[in-house]
Image (tube, rainbow, N blue to C red; front, top):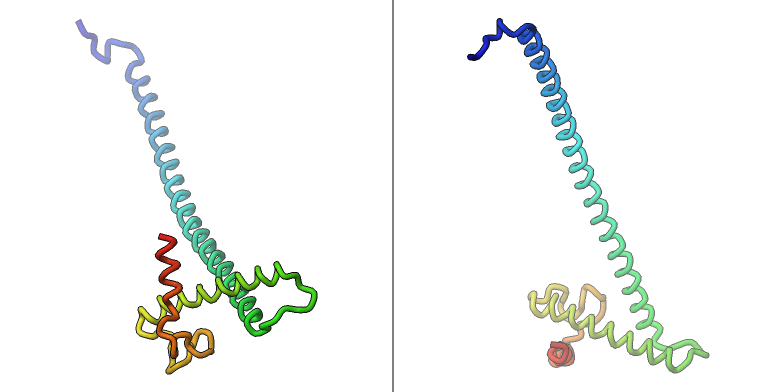
Length: 153
C-alpha cells in the first residue's frame, strides 16, 4: 500500500527545498552557457582579426622579398660586369642567377603577356620592366622555357 504525501512527515517541505535548489542550478547553468557563448563569439572575432593580420604580414613579407629580389636583379643587369677581385666561381654563380632571372622573366612573359593578350606590352615595350619586349624580333624566345618545363615534367 502506497502512502500519500500527507502521511510522510516533511516530504512536502523537502520536495520544495529540492525544487528550489534545482531551479538555482538551472539558472547557474543558463548563466554559464550564456557567458560561454559570449566568450566564444569574442574569441571567434579575435581569430578573424588575427588571421587578417597574419595575411597582411605574409603579404608584406612577400612584397618586401619580391621587391628586394627585383632590385637585386635590376642592379645585376645594369652593372653588367663584376668588380675587380671577384672570384670566378662567384661570377659563375651570379651568371647562373641571372640566367634564372631571365628564365623567370620569360615565364612571366609567357603567362602574363602571351596567354593574356599582351597584358604588359605597350607597342614593343614591356611596361613591367620598362625595356624592349623580349619577343620583339625573336619569336623563339620562349622555346627554352617550354623545353625546360617539359624536362621538369
